[in-house]
Image 1: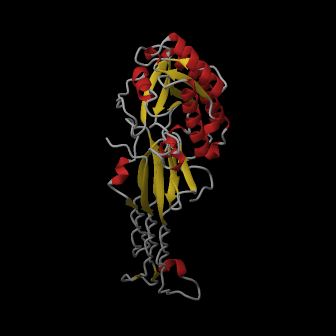
Image 2 (image 1 turned 45 degrees about the horizontal axis):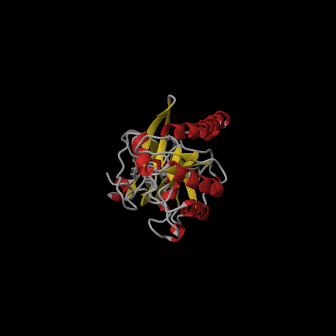
Image 3 (image 1 turned 180 degrees about the horizontal axis):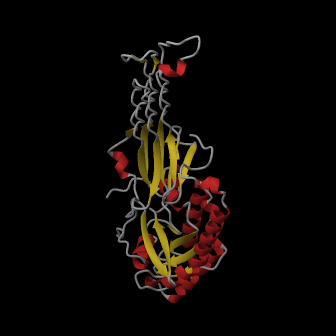
Length: 358
């Protein structure tokens, strides 16, 4: 299945049905009068987040979503049937942006969260609504209110606990394949990973989700390589695992590799520069102990923290790295549960925040 994390769609709610102009005419009924019913209300367009989706590929084949219009009012004070609403299903972590691609309309971060994107138009009143003592036979009815319509952007940001970052060929995909059952593409040339991959690892009876994104190179924030478009998938991570290739030419190259990725994270923004990170020197199975000590010292001087040493191919240091990452993941989950417990019930309504309108 092709990975697609951005799509533009057109949504339109249903128009309200027109009211009816009708008069009661029955044999042996002394008093008739207007009895035109109201038109039906148009259907709404809602968006809901579901668990069993992880890409926006469905929106490549359908970009227009229109709810049904309300039916006409009828005689004998019969109101028209309301138009059928439609529900658009998107993956958890989808953001809905306005046509300008900057205004955030909604951020669906948990399964079942629903937002009404366009509300259907009200039905027009029938002529029975216009009767009065001075106008006992009105011959007018409302035409119904039009529905709302708009173009919106859907942008998917994957929900993961740990994000893997680094230069191309730093060993991110190999690490993901070692600790999870994911099977990303692995080869000995740069940019083997062309789209994000997710995997679930078990650490001390705790399940954590890891996200592997394509490698960054110098100038990625300006579009070099694959750019920074995939960095949005690690924005929500509790902690980053920054992998640095230990087979670089020397300690200076190792430190430069670390600084390159950090500068790209800072240039991207989105709070990634402030996200906690664990730095690890990879491919230790291809290095001697003296070289590992030299390059680890250079990397620690560059990042200002202790550096782990691991080899995904040999399974060295992998479990220790996951255990070092676990406290940050658990702290984020505890904070999220506390925030949900303190949330106002009015903010947890099915249709989203109270009083919200697009």
